[in-house]
Amino acid sequence: MEKRTLLVVVLLLVACRNGNTRQVEPPPPDPRCGDGDLSSVEECEGSNLAGATCKSLGFDDGPLTCADCKFVKTLCTKRCGNGAVDLGEGCDGKLGVGACASFGYQACTEACQLDVSHCVPVLFQAGPALSVAKGGPAVIADLEPKGLSDLVMAVPSFGRLETFGYTIEQGFITGRKLSYGRTPLEAAAADLDGDGRMDVVSINDDGAIDRYLYSGTSFAFSTFADAGCPAARFLGTSGPSDAGTAVFALGCADAGAFGAVIVQGATPTTLPLTTSAATLGDLDGDGRLDVLFVSGGGLESRLAPGWDAGATQAVPSSPLAIAAGDFDGDGDLDLAALEPAAVLLWENTGAGFASKSAFPVAGARELKVVDLDLDGRPDVLWQLGDKVQVRRNQGAWSFATTEGTLGAGAPISLAVGDADGDGDPDLASTHSAGGDATVTYLLVNKVR
Image 1 (cartoon, rainbow, N blue to C red):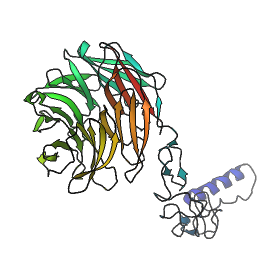
Image 2 (cartoon, one colour):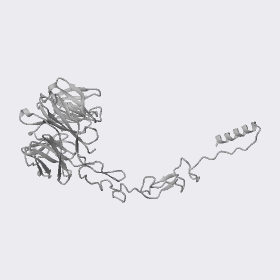
Image 3 (cartoon, rainbow, N blue to C red):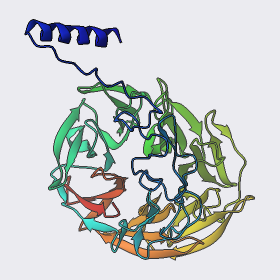
Image 4 (tube, one colour):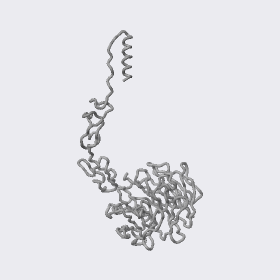
């Protein structure tokens, strides 16, 4: 008020000095809540809601009121999200969401409308093939910089690892070379030191596991002694943790019995096993991956984090390879098993594993369990000649058949990973092209 009074006095003085006497109107009072006028700083004033309604504010129904010149929306209701498919909605949460007739998945949007854009007529589209004069087995990994992935290849003939970055137009193209005077036979990738960046590991020809830790600008090399159990092939990796991701490998082949080599931290852990058919899976439901293997007594396990022996469970046979997945959605881990003339599915009954389904196929290799079409159900796939054969999980132990066509040459490795960075798993199958030459065929997943 003092400023207003001063303003009036000044105006009067100016008027008098000019020889004119005139009355100056005082400025209007500041707007305040309750004065009956709706100002620009108020949402509403009494019953004046400025034309707003519950619907205009994003709700479906209900009365909008005003208190202290602000909207009161407590009586506004929103049908989307109430757990029921109401009039005008196509779904609500999981209600109304079905399965795609072909491949892919349906989803419910935030507006409770059904999104079927991820239902696709074909699962894979062939991408550009990568020919390498001297190559080897490969994996897909999202190395730095993150986004589009890399193909990480062991090149024994040159004594190094090579990476091939992915491009949308050309597929995998030549990238980095990691040379440390070693002879890598197989590669894997994981965040070994927990810094959020992907590192590389390889199995050397002497059975030692070599590490390539990414420092931010380059890969620093170090190696682990085999600790009496030379590594033979990688099983997989665990999920990330503060201590870094654990890498699992099978080894001790020269002793006539296989063991598991677990690389995490400064010293590898060796677990004595008696089988070559092993996989990783969360058998006890604690969120950690365990080591599962078939022995003469059945399915045995070494449970994370202490790697104590779990209960032995019965299995129907002693297969060449196994892979784990919850095929029936009951929360228990089931198994796929590769035999010389068939791929079998074993159901976890709680007391053991029982045969449930069989897919006759001779000569299959690279058995894997992956949710290829992101519908929440794990699928089964394997490599056979110039094909990748898929059994798509439709629920209730029903599986549909599809396949992807590769190309000529003897298969060496089958890699699963998100090559193009769109969130669905792609496939890269590396084949021998004669001598040391290889060709890698790419199958791009079309679900996303």
